[in-house]
Amino acid sequence: MFAQLVIFDGPRSPEFSAAADRAGRGRIMPMLASDPVFGPAHPGSYILQAADGGRAVLILADTEAAITHASKLVTGSELLPDEDPALLTDPDHVVTYEVVYAMSPGFPELGNN
Image 1 (cartoon, rainbow, N blue to C red):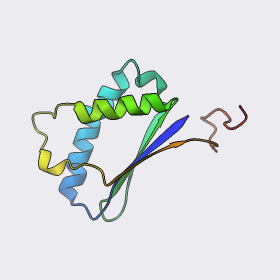
Image 2: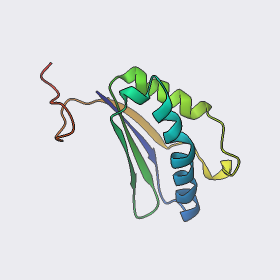
Image 3: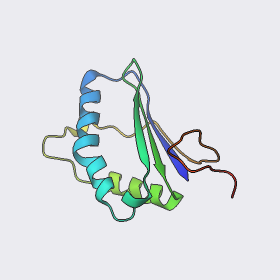
Image 4: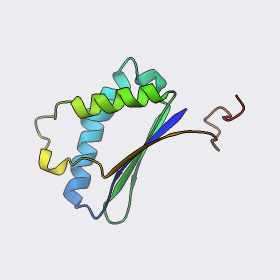
């Protein structure tokens, strides 16, 4: 399993948060969930927000290739008609990790392969 951490450093405005929510719920997550490569390989994502509006997006996938595929889909997707590109900035940091251990009843035990 692999995890990608996408970070948007704060401070960020309430308008950024609203635009990020709109993009995530209206365009990005539906597109990824319905993708035949990424959808089945994606056990979940977490959207985290700091008090200053900064965000971290944690994306989980069965393979690193699935995460790479998802990144290409997102960066190549067209904005919805009501999305403002000025509020949809590139992330400040993107890092991909191999998951070596998970402490969650929803995940199979990892690290004993």
